[in-house]
Length: 312
Image (cartoon, rainbow, N blue to C red):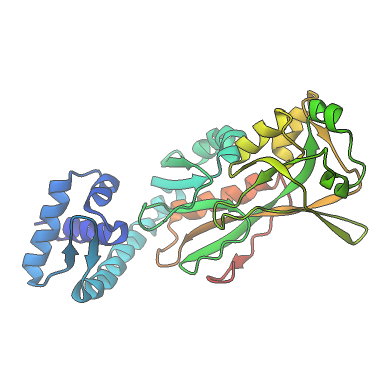
């Protein structure tokens, strides 16, 4: 038995709460991971995991061993990445999950520049607006709009996305051009609702002008939880919508969307990178986050404040 491989397999099973997910993340077969954990238990002469047909739970002894094993693996990784060559050129796989609209419009077009700077880093990119269990899914970090409140995560604010309110010409021809945000509450108007994937609640449209805040309570024909779907609904004339400027600008330029409410401002959306608090920030993750801050500079004024766990 290779003690390092067995330790690594056990740690991944605990974090993923699944032999199948652990095997997949390690690039091994289920039988190999099972055998490594069984050999580790035989060597230690303790039961580390309780297995059922539905889930895997760590035992009391296993929880103690996990803390030590995870620390040892992190120290080994630290030792390797502290070498001058590794520090200058981070290597390895980085698992990242980002919103679909941001990935398509901003992140993926910029990735060639990141690869040119860090050719040794491979990015496994998840594209979604869904909730992600970073530990269980073995994700290094997620990029999300809005505050990150989960106590097990550290969140770093990497920038802000300017937002605006828009509508299609077809919608405005049918419903009329609203002069004031509250005009959207009239019977002939509607908005494209946007639902938070974290809370399940509708995110209200709030605007300010000259220090006066106005929150709009308008009816919707359709509500979505994805930025690309929201844009598609707005282009289809299903209602006025609020979008990040980077998504709207090409459609404003070609006449598919019209900007509404000149002089009114929508509060920018803060963007956070979140990662598990019990994981060391690797060199590859650190340079990726720093690169994201640079990327956000073209979209809004970045704020690189570190937000402590439980307060984001």
